Structures are given as structure tokens and as C-alpha cells.
Length: 142
Image 1 (cartoon, rainbow, N blue to C red):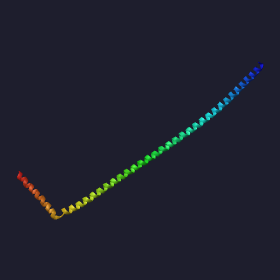
Image 2 (cartoon, helix red, strand yellow):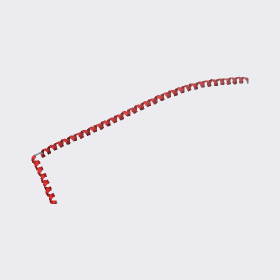
Image 3 (cartoon, helix red, strand yellow):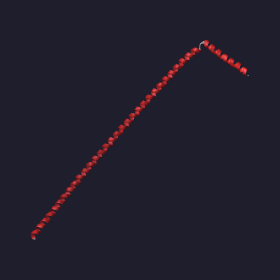
Image 4 (tube, rainbow, N blue to C red):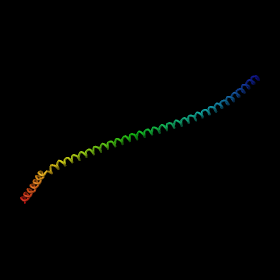
């Protein structure tokens, strides 16, 4: 039995030493994994921050582009409005000029007709006759 005891004691001591060495090695592996994991987490967090900044910048540029597009559309609209106002003003001015020339021509024609002495005498006679008739008819009615 002594031989067996010596073998068992040696095996137990060997098992305990192996257990302690393995435990120590596992602690070191766990620490290495913790350090590696924290480094990976820090790298991912930094990458995430960079991605967020890039997205913010892209969003800002898109907003600026849309603002420029809106300003361009607004400017186009204002130009079209000015163009329409100018066209309307030109039409109005043209109509006024046409009407004035027509009035002038009509005045000249009628003026030359009514300024003739024979026509003027006829008009005066017609007015006098109409006045006399109204006097006569007015006297008859009384």
C-alpha cells in the first residue's frame, strides 16, 4: 500500500500543480481577452463616431444642395414673373399708343369735316330749325 500511497500522493500533487498552472494560464488568457476586447470596443466606438460625423456632413451637404435648388427655382419663378409683367406692360403701352393714334386720326378727320364752313352753316341751320320747331310745338301745347 505504501507504493500506492506514494503514487497517489505524486498524482495528487501533480494534479494540484497542473490545476494551479492551468488556472494561472486561464487568468492570463482572460486578461489578454479583456484587453483585446476593450481595444476592439474602443476602435468600434471611434469608427462609429467617424461614421456619424460623415453622415452629418453628408446630410448638411444635401440640405445645402436642396436650398440651392429651391433658390434657383425661386429665381426662375421671379424671372418668369418679371417677363410676364414686362410683356403686359408692353401690350398696355402698345394699346394706349394705338388708341391715341386712332383718336388723333379721328379728331383730324372729324375736325376737317366740321371745320368746313358749308357744313358748319348746315349744322347751325339744323340746330336753329330744331330749336324753332321746339318753340312752335311748345307754344301749341300750352
